[in-house]
Length: 426
Image (cartoon, rainbow, N blue to C red; front, top):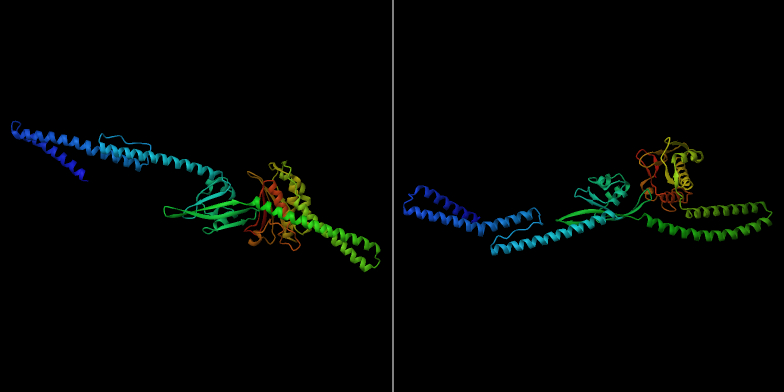
């Protein structure tokens, strides 16, 4: 501010001398004095600009470069020792900032690359709780084709059960969620501090494969132990029954022995069903049209429903696109699904199978039974879990194994209309 006043004073002095030259007699001594003052003003302006104004303008240009974050430019020397030392310091600082910015940009690019290819779902949230960014894995987990489609949505509005779970997480909460499509996720809501504000984010880790392997290893071990013990017992009991049956003539005792023999057969069938659930073969995939397969399975599916007193109907397109599947294993899976639907619908109920065409065919089997409550939905596809009094929990376990082997996405849930739907996305 003081520099501006000094410069203004010199300019005023020059202006006064110019006016005085116009008014003073050229032949007078005062005229020469005024000329001297005019020359002195010009010299002062030149010296002042070189020693003060030029360095100040150079420094002001440097401040503008910092404000614009233009770290690639530098300042030129002004021909003054003190000012040039400041210019050198400024240029050195700009070079350091440029290198640091380049290093941070490279680190950010690496971080973006790692986040993009990470198998962990990563969702960044704004202060309003809406999605501000997500990677490809998170979009896949939430059923979206591209991460961009999640922008601006709240987690509960992403249209998936996983989104509802993520939306219900409290800060710093970690929860393992098992969904109605047999998927298992570890969900974490965490946060970091930046500029004095907490920035929340969500991590989603898919545990389905690890959980399935651990569960399968566990129930295989259980079944092997059960099969060993049951078969040993059945062999001994059957031998005794055979011997006793040949020697006994009492009708009551003979009837009792017959009941024991029936029980042995039941136990044998029980352990055989468990063993068959473990030995599901790998699917042999080939191109098939689901509509043709469904029509060929129709008589069997109708008879399954009729056995429970339910009606069966199909809604198929005239021609569906081909998908790669194993018809034998897929028939077994569809049979179990329809059987469960018919038993749920019961006498007088209705079961409907429909095949819709889109980017990928979708098979839906719906029934109007009592439906699935929230507590039961969390236990679906869990080994040995069943809501039936005489159920063993093998049917849905087999279905899950078969569909997962085909790479299908599937879910079982009761909708707002009261219908329970098993949906298979090929």
